[in-house]
Amino acid sequence: MKFIHRVVIMSSIGFGIGVITGVLICAFSATLSTADGTLHLCSDALIASCGNPLTAFTIQAFASGIYGIIAFGGSTVYEIESWGLVKCTLIHYLCTMVFYYVLGFSMRWFSISHLGEPFIMFIIMTAIYVAIWLANFISYKIELEKLNRDLEELKAAPDIGLAAANAHK
Image (cartoon, rainbow, N blue to C red; front, side, top):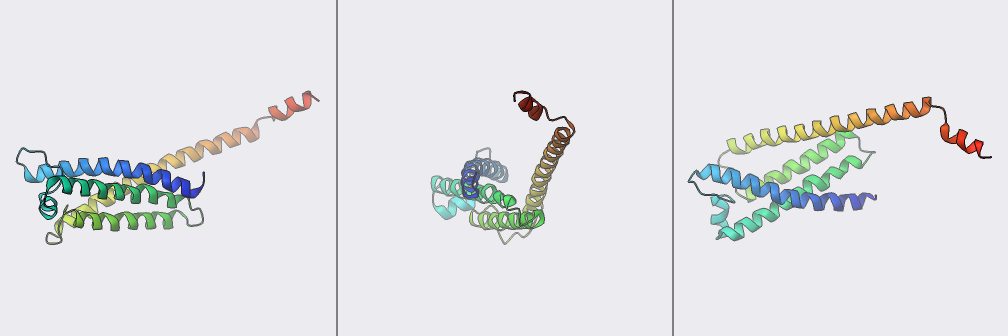
């Protein structure tokens, strides 16, 4: 599959997952922060700046989808073999974190006036990023070890296909 096709597919998946994840996280955090027994789908600050809850929710859902595009579509940088794992990881991490803060401040998830919130979210987002990265790394490593074992078995086994082809001659 061509690289650009992979980017488009991953970005499309990312948009959907971003919308769903963004709505769930925002609903959870906004409902907890207000603690009034009502389900809130976005922050009161975003609703106030947008003028109505439906507009705020729509903007937030779309922005979360864009973040999903950045995170999932951007993960295709790992397929650029000439870059190496460290470069790919740093570029992807920086892109996702920068856009997360742009989104977080613009969606009023946290404010610059409360510096503790962005710092706590940095710690949480970095921990989540590291956990996902490690899970993928371990998964790929296990798969690579399995492929190497299978390759070694093929090298050690007699060539059954060649023997069968020669028998038909």
